[in-house]
Length: 83
Ligand SMILES: [Zn+2]
Image (cartoon, rainbow, N blue to C red; front, side):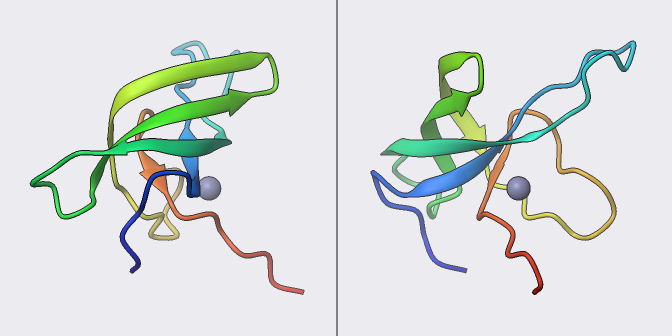
């Protein structure tokens, strides 16, 4: 798994609402900072929501394991669509 660097585009997992009105989604995000001492797992992100920009300075890495969405507030490398 490559380590993120500033300027890379990754996925940020949005939080869903408890009532399920909004579900957790993958959003495009630009790495704005890689936190020292985290082996590249902890980053700050500029999240590109359809409704606007949002900045999160504490995102942990959770790669999807095929058993549903990773936790809200985490980041992962963008999935590849099988053709
Ligand atoms: Zn994703």
